[in-house]
Length: 301
Image (cartoon, rainbow, N blue to C red; front, side, top):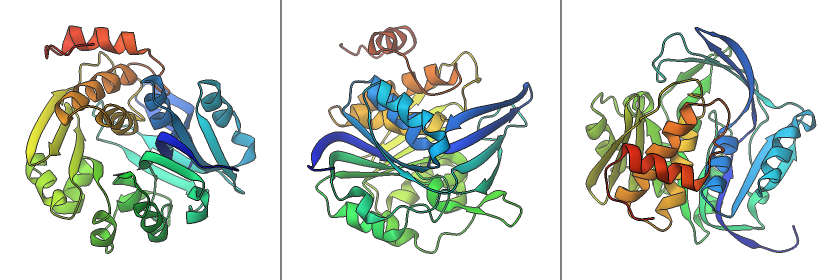
């Protein structure tokens, strides 16, 4: 990189080789929050960059992102991250995760030549995004967005991922503008089952906005006000990548729209994504039509 380019959003996290286990069978997919998120933001028209770590044998995911106009900055590692996602029921929040291999941790120098209106931190497990990376990004004139999953998940000796206490949560969250979580993660962090109360508790740690997904939809806490939108998906075949798609599409609209508009777009995009496996690849007119059909909010396009 010879010059700094201003992107709308830079999304980063390790690529993951995903094994998806459901009651209907086992499938293998190219995963990673950065992958799902970058697709969603790009399909909504943003100028997007993706930064990832992976083994060279998995370059196909980089090429797929580049094919739709995303600038990708890959860093090659001895192994890609491997993730097994086991969904024993139809509830997308009910899953067992295992990670037998990791592509390692990001470093501040991977972002020296990148500037953006927003940086979206989308890690998979604790340790992938060290504190010095967040501290470096906080110094940039950008909105700093993070997904909670990459900070509270830890790998057990048997490679199972669990939610563990996060001793550094105050340090990290004091630097975050927008935090994405799901209902299970929010309860793990706060001890509060009620999602509204959990969002309020998290906001006291620093984030100005909380985007919380649950099995039925999205809850946003912004400027002291709650906003809600339901999912209207007809199937759950593409449930993996739900949260990644949600926060990326929310931020894609949030850069120019208020929370009450951004949440509708996010709910619509995420609903459509869950109906098909893999990253979101629908057009803006398709999303607009879906919003008019399912969300009676009178949004003007």
